[in-house]
Length: 605
Image (cartoon, rainbow, N blue to C red):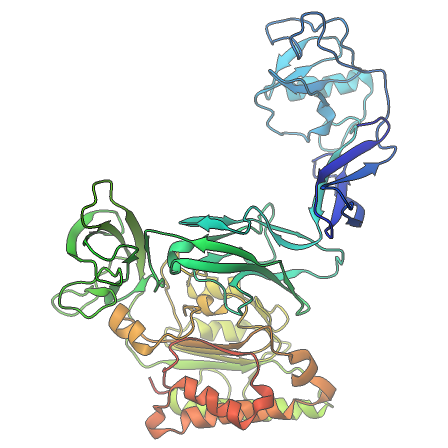
């Protein structure tokens, strides 16, 4: 501080830009004020400086250590400070510290444990909640400024500052870093345009459209005090080199990408097939860096009661395979002698790898598998749409006719719970109440929608991912951290960016490409499922609903998809083949389509 100015400085790199903000104090009646939002890093140096001019009221207050050379204010056992200390307001410092700041900087009710208060008369108190009243009385006696909430306000001094780089950045992980286990993913972002908000943050490998398995971030908008930081469980990918790229999808469809960072993942034991969900079977898919030796598996129930163990040999690829069962990995039976699924909601698997010739301690990895309730009955569909054109526009009829085609194709195999052939259900002025009611029916396992969408909402915010999670009781994370209570069989969200968020997990579908039906039935003893949506490469705003007309190739694509998938021999064509047929028929509308889950799912399952 160079009174009356405050001088800020921080490490910087040429080419970066910064946003600098200031606030008077940290109480609720104080807000952040932008001082600059496009401050460029200083050139030919690794340090950038910003001067906030005229913010400090200069006084004769000063502090020095005194003749004893103690380097700080006297201990709390002393009644007064040295004579050369003087201040007209209470100050705060660490017990053994040298830095003093005005008590008025801190908001009412803040915990200042470990701090001492130096009063203007030189007396010292170690912080306690009782001092709040003493501070209030001091303000009343001295006529100091009061706040409506409390009397421990006061002149703010220089206030508080924060500096953030503009754009989106992953910090704390640098090129060449070796990662293992659960890795925090700190996120820093600063925008110059306050009219845009973040819909989703994601982590990819080398600018892929797919999130890295095991990575997760909070849902947006963030709650009060919630951080955008995520985590990445690196045991859910194979060992090797990755190029991490942090990205953000904004509410206007814009995508921000950070500079790629090259890292190496190295775990002694990992799970290349990470979807930890089971039903009548529990998949054990551990792999190790060791290519010989034996493995030992301990199994615990949801109360961590020990159930037993299994042992086997590590194969040449490092898989922990069970004798007599084709790998990779193996599945445990989770049914009683009568074929009924056991009621345990989860199991914990603890895998120990024992390499040949090694001595303890041996590496151990754990995985918690969550068990879904069985749903072995006929399923029905919830089909709805949002009208995106006014009644006078040609696109209004285009959308209605498109939805008649969709409704009829679905109805043949999974009876619709909403609407009719000539009157498919439109989500209009009446809102989403009827749709969400039908979604919770036990037989409702298909959901098909056309309309506005994003990475976390449908219909302009009428239906959100947290709402679906609450309705269905499915967990959003991948890998999951809780049981799916109402997973869906098939979901097609025909809207912008619907494949970019956590929509698949909200419907209980793994956000993984290239899975097949046996990954669900044989490995896990659960019903197969798939999700279709559009990723961020889909230019919906430009083509799909431009010019008051529904983009003809999109109509052709959707019509061809449903006719091909539904008109095969008794509905046994794989969904991936139907997508390919639609792309061949209407290539101009095919860009950005994403399929997660079982790519060989048939419409009549």
